[in-house]
Image (cartoon, rainbow, N blue to C red; front, top):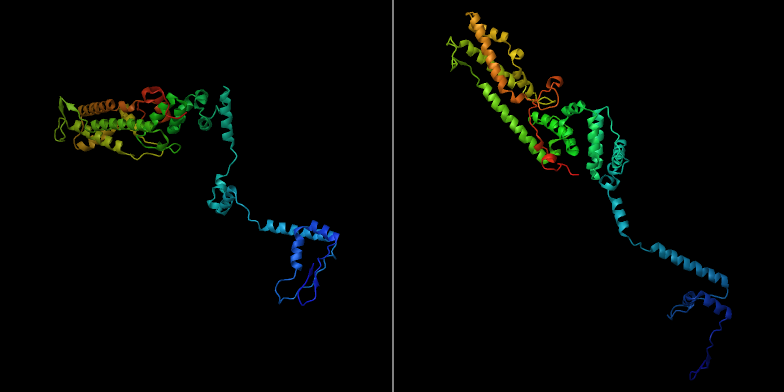
Length: 406
């Protein structure tokens, strides 16, 4: 279009001629040509020199397309590299766990990592599954200690699945095969067997174990099961039985400490000047001195338990089992010197000693009753076994319910 200005020659501005090749190239390149055209346009500032025109027509169609793709690829790579990833909940937990020191991170603590089950546990599960199908569990029938450990493992697994009633008859039948060995094993560790009897609801085992525990008068020399591991009502029962036994011991000892012999219906006087009863008085004093020393000696319980039962059982036997007649005679002879003992004196001393021993023998009878299934002489039991544990003391018999959860 021609532009006319007064007083100036006419200037004709012609639109640039775009070749068909350039039009097709621009259509392919798209927005990139507009960027390129802005870079080749002349700036608007008057003081800035116009850059040299860059010939576009020198580049072939293929080169322009290649450059365009490279540029787009570079921009996409930059966007991916600079993009901020969005943290998910799992990523935050993982990052926080990694930042915790190993010794404070329970997830990587070696002691708490899953470990494969041992052979004993696997055997317990196998026995439990056998009982589900009515089969006898594989329990040792020769060694009672091994069998006890196996039964405890089976009970531990069965308790997890509420299957104590299922395994109870099978384990009870296994114990019947050991006979007397069961009672001897109970003597060695009564609390452990007492706890087992609660799961098996086995009355004989419960009574036998309770007798030995009560007979130790509150002393607890066993380490396998502690008092706190037993049910509260059972602890109360045992404590009541111990208190009753201590009261009985106190009554018996009080009577024996005050023992005396009546001569012609009168109590002997504590006066050695009375020639009529002097020998009887000596017998009384010698017996009381022996009883005081014998009862008070070794009061501290042994690691294996108390020995109170052995003292009273010796008194219950009488005769020359303790304080023999010859020993008493020698003491009285030494005390009566230079007076010599006549045959009448010796006969009187012997009768007095027998009379005191017979009286003491009757007083300790209740303490010497054996409620255990074992023989005192054969097994050498030292503690008392006179505690009476009846059926009404057993929870599942008296109340119809067990002390353990099934």
